[in-house]
Structure formats: structure tokens, C-alpha cells
Image (cartoon, rainbow, N blue to C red; front, side, top):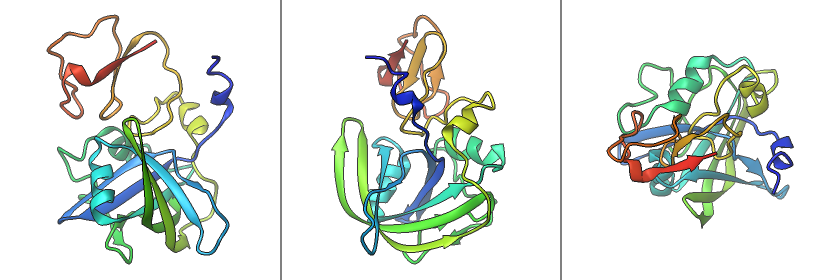
Length: 207
């Protein structure tokens, strides 16, 4: 199978966020899509089941998605796309708003917000696909959305929390928890992910 066929697809980079049990989590995803034109419309988003954001969406029963602006600061993608919520509150020190369900979101570097309640879910391997019904929506700024192709076109690696990856160059191992890439021919048996602290058993070979 030639992966170049589906690599023709492009995806919007979004910040998926939720709050539950006194904690707030968020991560960069590229799996948010509208799937019905009914009113209110329904959307889907997939996220790794091992991510803290996934667990929080499940606990909250709702989620918020903000679409990143094409000129969004690289630091936003770095924090929400490459760091683990297990070790830091990614929203700390930022101007944070909350939607009607209490989920946090950012307005700076974002072009739109859609808040949904979870109405269904489907487990797909190591991912959970949430079906959300829109409850709130607003435009935050003018301009286009940052896409995966535009982001990787800057020479940046696909954010580890994104569901869809662009093929990496060369061989290596990918952490199935946070997506960190260990670029080497071999993986030490006692290796620990520097991002989320997952053990070597959570890594899979990328070729």
C-alpha cells in the first residue's frame, strides 16, 4: 500500500481541551471534523487514549476545540503539542477563558472556537473517537487556519499529540503515548520517554 496516496490529505491543527475533577488539559490534534449539517451540527475528534486530555474529555462529557491561526506562535504548538499534561499545567500563565461546560480555551493565536457535549464514542485501537454535538461556537479572529502541511512545510515535525502523522525520514521509534520520536536503529530496553516517561514497551518502530 502506497501511503503517498492518503498523504495528499491535509488537516487543520486544533487545540482540544477539557476540564474535570479540578484539572484542565489540552493537546494539539488534527482529527477534528464536522460530520453532519443537521442543527445542531455534530463533529468528531480522535485522541490517544493514553493522553491526559482524552481521560479528561471522558470525565467531563464535553470538550472545546479552538482552531489555530496560520500565524500562531510556535510556542503554542510546542507547549500543547509536545509536552505532557502529566508533568505541567499547559494553561498556566496564559489568559484562559472557559466555555459553558467549564472547559478552558485560549483566544490568542486562535481563529474560532467550537464547544461540544459528547453524544457518542468509539474505541479504535489506541485511540478514542468522540462524537460531539455543538453547543457553542464563535469566531475569534480573521484569517486562515494553520494546517498540518503548512506547519510541516516550515521544517517542523508533526506534533506528537496529532492523530495523523506525516512519514518521518529515516528509522526510529515512536512513543505510542505522546508521539515522541527516538531516532535510532535500536531502542535500549530500559529507555524511558523524555516527554511522558513511558517505558520502552510503549514504543513502536517507525520505518
